[in-house]
Image 1 (cartoon, rainbow, N blue to C red):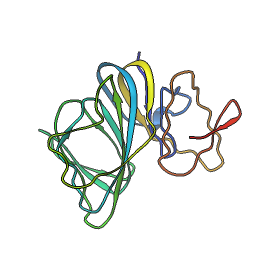
Image 2: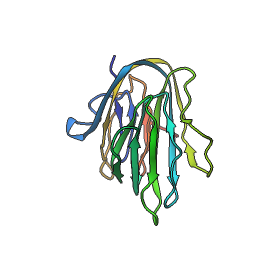
Image 3: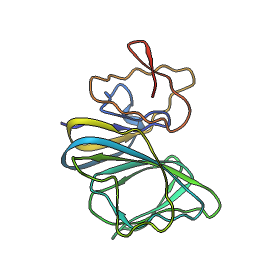
Image 4: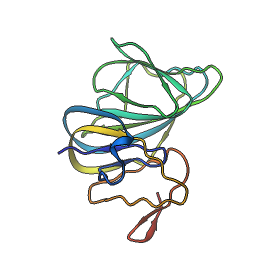
Length: 193
């Protein structure tokens, strides 16, 4: 079964139907070996100017969105990539992430990193303990009985002011507001998100 991961400048949802985002909103599509996801865990990272991430790996696929600034990203054995505000990224299971650094020496960088974890998998594995503080603002995690997935798609979808967006939640849904405010209602009742 193939589930989709939707990102938006306003909303992110796991398992939402295609009525939410259109194919023209597609930014990234990745495949990986089938996994039984029991937890979707997210971190909202705020890096001070020039801050460098320690070398690390992921036991679970990590997908993300840069909401402010620029990030210099390098997977071992590949060329570095400069990620700008509004860009999406994928950190695969296994290879070392050699750089995930704030590329600016004068401005903050902010990104969200979302992991699709199987039972017992950590959010991140550092090669050595970090030597400087990392401002990771943990977001509410979502636990599942086990969703079998073999990939993810990242969409950028912007809601216009006062727009209403209906999402089929017959599949599990997790949400992330990257920018702006959204009121969520289920069966006409406001939900605290």
